[in-house]
Length: 314
Ligand code: GLN
Image (cartoon, rainbow, N blue to C red):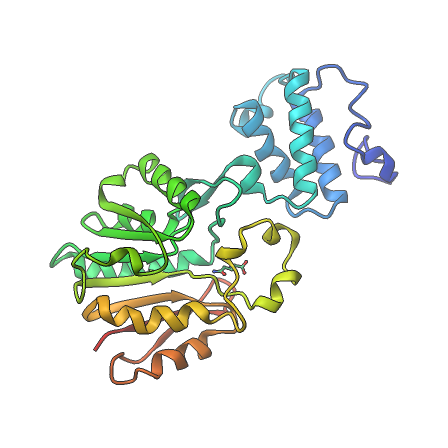
């Protein structure tokens, strides 16, 4: 037995056009039922929620309206578009690239294909930055650097939470910088972030920030090069340059850690996201500059993996 009228356990009935061709203007509930069943058969997580979120995007109504009163009918064009997007999701295109958005720290971010999708794990990184910056913000306006800002999720969340912080947010991708600027505007913090295009600290030369920065944060690419081809299909659709951390996945830490000393003030903090098995290796890189950094603190993510490495300049 299948999970609904459309599938009956026969996989052919799950083909995107089967079961719907009979209907001229299907109602939204019918479409969602079909899509849930189809996505489930393709082993996509949260099939119903996925179908509803894609429907929200195409129909332009919040999903509660799909279930209130009589069924909303969907014109043929939109129904076709809906089916096309459901098929893309079934082929492993991330949901964020289909709906064009992702929530992070409770804020909405525009995320087109080609830009790294912010993860819930990184919220632990941001929480730590906020804890540190809250203490500083009582005395002066903190200066922050966000390396590899991507969609701007870390920089924007920090400026939303710390009202007197100023962030320099850098990325090597011009698409990321365009998208991050757009996200800063939609979240109304564009006046407190300067977005810069370039390689790590390079665009900060001539900004007169040496020894003045309160906090440097980064979620750099950290996946081992040889692991890249084993990533889940969804992750493989994200840009390689946002994920690939070189031979051991540590390339960026080897650059960020020593270079951060030039920019941090005395007591300034460095907060780094690391891969689930990298905390000790990154700690060792910090400890190579023993006399320059205070002891390393390691914080776990929501799954209990050591995920955040924190240190400060002596
Ligand atoms: N957290 C991402 C993943 O494993 C990797 C992010 C990164 O390389 N910074 O999918």
